[in-house]
Image (cartoon, rainbow, N blue to C red; front, side, top):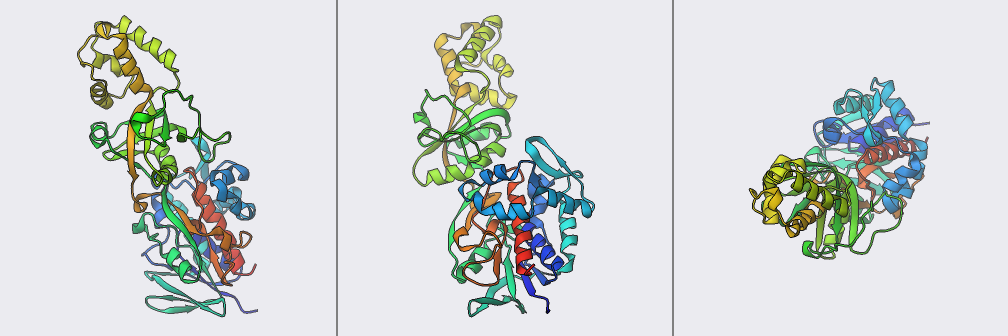
Length: 435
């Protein structure tokens, strides 16, 4: 039997896995990469450490992808975390589990993961520096792939081009154009895992570089001065079990964030990027930071009163050093309108309420997210209704397969998105080879 000729378009996480598996199954595989090297986006993922997966089970993984997560059940059932760990170990890359169940290479080097997957895909012929311009189809079946330089015959093609974020790594949206040209529907692209831009730029700049840990960030469907003061907050958001939030709340989560020159960044903010972007299309959005979520309003009120009474001769500015990062103190003082040199013992009950309000509800109006090109992940993509979840094959074109971020799947941070790319890539490569 003649080996099937397979062209994999894109040498990222999904593409390397698809090419490796297709070759392993006996396919004659060409792996096309338009940049000069494979795995460029993986090299910068996890701050260069490459968060490859998560220790959570399949059910929790699927929940992390929201309503579209069920599409991934077959792919995860075929190739999941343990298979990935075993594959990497075979090529000398040991893994470890860190806080939040995140899996990393023991070396903390994304390069080691890319090198292992490149070796796994060595059964395919890697052709770099060639951008695909067209997938050739005859009578509803893939027959070839055309680049700007040459044409490759193909019995099957796997679109593994990624999303439209970080275009410098090669994921500039090519796969969406290729799919649309063949009649596929592309669900609107939006930035996911993306920082937020605030209206109060001067305030953000004055606190630039401040890292806040163990705080609560809540996003609201209103302007900052209309944030309801009487809500009892809890964790609400995609991937979090339980009831839906009140109508005024978009999401509320605990974690870490970074104040930047444009607004808010860091892990917690990134998680809210997509729901905030979607809410901005409907109207005003604001966020509130609870700087002391472990203390109720009443307990924090008592603590302030105790501190100001006990250290009554210290200045207000000095007293805040027990509550806030140093760089945040002066901007916070300015927000309250209280004289920074006023002694704690002279601060009135009304002034303490102003301090309390800002500690429990530091408000920002959100004007936008950073652009799609700056997002870690692209939301939207090829409509899942047009893809067979058991094979990753197109329901419209025989011999056309998809994997990874080019499809309408995206999840929270934590290794979910890379695992989905690996799993769907493995299944697409196996299916394309006819195994």
